[in-house]
Image (cartoon, rainbow over all chains, first blue to last red; front, side, top):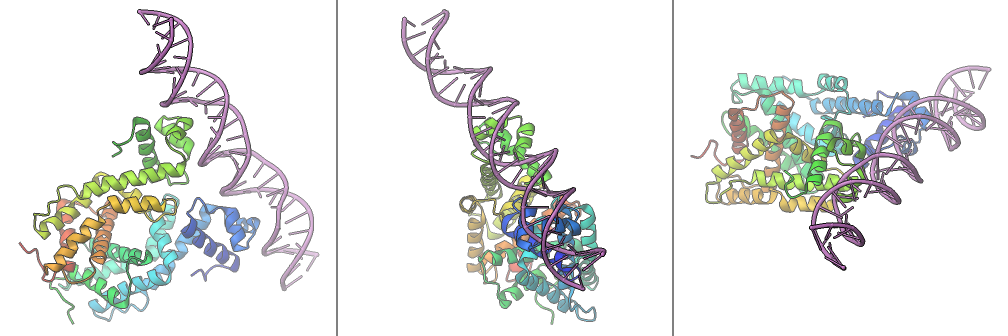
Length: 198
Length: 198
DNA sequence: ATGATTAGAACGATCGTTCGATCTAATCAT
DNA sequence: ATGATTAGATCGAACGATCGTTCTAATCAT
């Protein structure tokens, strides 16, 4: 997740992620990060300029990771349906395999603690843009109803996020079948004619 | 929103809500709450046992308010479609009229800062249960596909939440037409046959 | 030997909380 | 009716703890 950083930075970022998810931001003190990560406070400040800097670096790294994960194995040569299923499957896989990173972005993407600059970089490296293009294409080809692609993407994303939240809270067993069904729901919501068109 | 509390408690709760949404929990100190609310710190501790207590009281009050708001004007005599539209319209109206309370619940419903006890009370006073019953009925009557109602409710809720988030971030103009279209998306996602059945 | 890293003391600031003093208004005794 | 008494509302200074951050001096790795 943090391959682009050195060992010390990795230890700090990984520790911070775990602590913030388990204990909240306010309970995640620098001294605790130092103790758990095994990096002295002095050395942390050698690699990060402040606590805010750690959180923002964490945010940017996870956004980048999540973006690549969701967009992996995407091939524009495939049908819209195939691409559609792939991207939402990827998101579900991400939420299951990396729940802490996923939850961190969910919790902090609207937080004042994250600099606007970080949010801009997040948009640049994220998957929102590419996905909106796919939806736009689907509209133009008459597969999807003619409405704002941004709105559809956001609503579908919300659906999957809450599906994953239910899963993380043990309210729901998120099997492959359930995931497929969820993606079919999203598909049915916006297509001109109901049913998988293949 | 906080009619069940006295004036001092109301001032504290309202101030805390605004500060937490604008500045984060960690930047919302007791002294700041005191200064902005016009209630001295000593007096705050006369009415609340701790900062955690304030946050949890806030949480419970807003959950209760939101629950009543979303469930207002619901009539079981109406058709499933009518009830379906009403409840999601109510949620959208809530998100537009009371964005801070809405965001607070979104941000803190998974937070360790909220006691399990508060979350239990939230479920009791919330609208999740009643809505799942409506979905269950829709399944039994063959209107919805035969799948876990909880999953459908969660996904629909997620859709609307992200629709509202887009609106709050000025990414989307949430007119009545857009709201109607969004609810139609949710409906189409789970019905046996596509289209409003009236 | 040199730069990286350590542990942890020290800093001022601020945190959540406490506490005794003061104010208010209702109740009591006469 | 009036002064004494009282319960509780309100205040803000003060407390000890902890925060993020800096600094020092010792130790480690190469």
